[in-house]
Length: 225
Image (cartoon, helix red, strand yellow):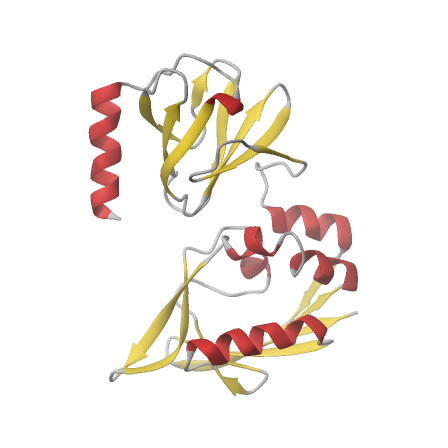
């Protein structure tokens, strides 16, 4: 990550921060440093025709009329002609998206479908749940980073980091540094067990996530209405 950040800075000086055209279809995304709560992301953008490369921060215009709105871990969202487009690293063409990147995907889904938090319980409508585990799942997962947490050489769970403000993780009350240790009382001390536990949630009406915060055991219950 540090090496890529240095490369972005170097290329921004080498190539400058100006590209020739203003249509999202004219660009490739070579790499990104995703946005976090405290820092705007950076994307390395290549103009297809000229081959010119420049680094842009979230919120900058590539050229007049074409702005980088949001930078995720694998994708960049542009605005152009009052529409939003999403372009993944390595893809040749963007896809139009309907959700405004100014608020997170989770926020838009919440307002559209309904979600309610009561203490450590999160009540979710079935339509929202189907949305989250359907075509929007990859976008939801990009709203936080989950890294293996190891103690004394043993995997004890997965730690959440870089949780996006207003994301489903934030709404659920989870915080950076929380370590998810169990799903429905199933320990996730193995990557295969974690995948199995997550896959079983698709058909479940309730789910319980056990996690550690500041060495204190905590619990999140999700109910599907």
